[in-house]
Image 1 (cartoon, helix red, strand yellow):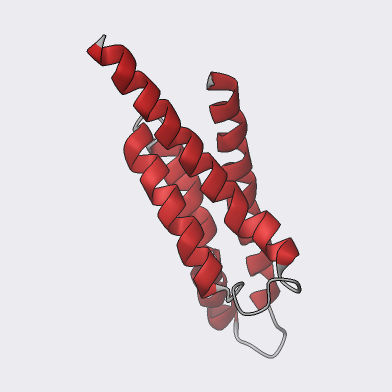
Image 2: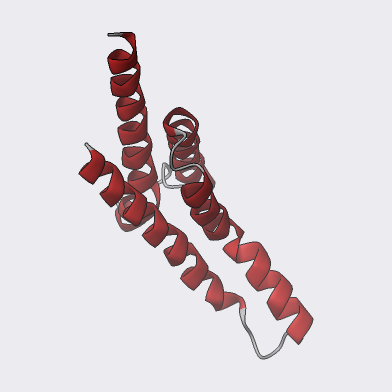
Length: 119
C-alpha cells in the first residue's frame, strides 16, 4: 500500500507539472511583460496548488484524499469533460483520473490505519 501511495504522489506531482507546463502558452508577443507574467501566474495556480498540497499534506491521509477527490470532480466539470467524453478522453486520463485514484488510495489507506488503531 505504501508503494501505491508513493506512485500516486508521483503522479500528482506530474499532473501539477503538467498544469504548469500547459500554462506556458499564455506568453504572447503582443502582450506586455506584465500581462504575460500575470497570465502565467494565474494559469499555473492549479499546478502550484496541487504540488503544495502534495508536499504539505502527505501525512494527512483523510484530508488530502478528500481534497484530491473533490479536485478531480471539480476538474471534470471545470474543463467540461462531461460534455463530450469521447473527444475529451485524453484530458480525462491526464487531468481527472490521477487525482481521483490518488484520493481514493489515500482514503483507503486512512481507513486501514483507523482499523489498525482500533485493534
